[in-house]
Image 1 (cartoon, rainbow over the protein chains, first blue to last red):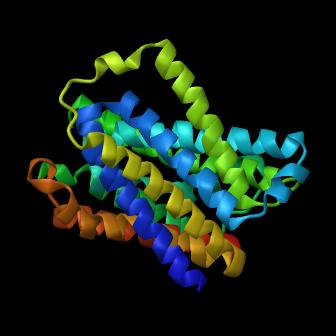
Image 2 (tube, rainbow over the protein chains, first blue to last red):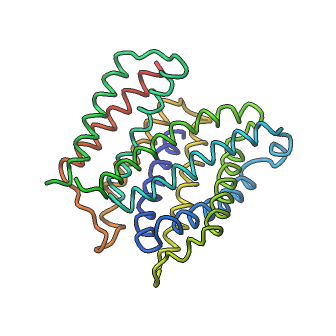
Amino acid sequence: MGIIYSIGAAIFFSLSVISVRRGVSQLGIFTGTVIMLSGGAVFLFFIALAYDNIQTLMAANFSGFFFFAIAGVIHFLGGWGFQNASASRIGATHVSAMTSVTPLFATLLAFLFMGERVNAYIMVGISLIVFGVYLITTSDKQ
Amino acid sequence: MNKKRLEGYFFGMLTALCWAISPIFIHKGLETLPSPIWGTAIGLMVAALLYLFWYLWKKKWKEVSLPVGNSIYWQIAAGVAGAMGILFRNIALETDQVAIVITLAQTASLFTLILAPFLLGNQLREKITPKLVAGVFFILMGATFIVLGRNF
């Protein structure tokens, strides 16, 4: 079931960036982002109420809220904001491809701040991503 | 490449960077709030409130050029689809290995290539070139190698 949910997640992420492209073209980045964040927040609040026990939330302490709040600001305010700014400039297909380099940044951060080792798989992966980014950034010259 | 497109690629990279940083704080948050769904909902609500305050303070709605047509509905759909994506990924993470879930979630760019021509409409239709498709393929292969390299 996990594989089906993972593919479902990919389809929803894809639908999200395509919808952004249609929305921000007329609303602009700032208004588009505020509507996207508000709509997503209200929706996810009700999903959380339906899917999970509210007692879990009540039992949490301040640090749990604090770290999730920081994560939310970085992922949604930063991530969705930059995604909207990017989609309005280069389109849904290009921004979607660019965000696929997330594992590369995660690896670089782990290497720099957590002392994680870089093995042959990772080196091959980095090379492939760099070449892929080069192809995408030069693809509109055809 | 013109300045507008260069900015677009730079913002795309910043998006990926933000999405690489946030799991560090999610991991810390889960230590005392063991619910990824509630945690994500809290994060999204905090982000929405902060942005809303800034948006109202700066009166950014004045920059909207009317008429907006169906754009509002598309943006709400974008937020709901993004939230659904996170919900599905979190459910998958509860049952499957991180390496498999993250790798499959990265295939979003492939689905965008397939779905965009049907959903973007004639005005916004984007040119799908062989170079773009090859670039997506190489990035996905690279992401798969990195996820495998970090997990095995």
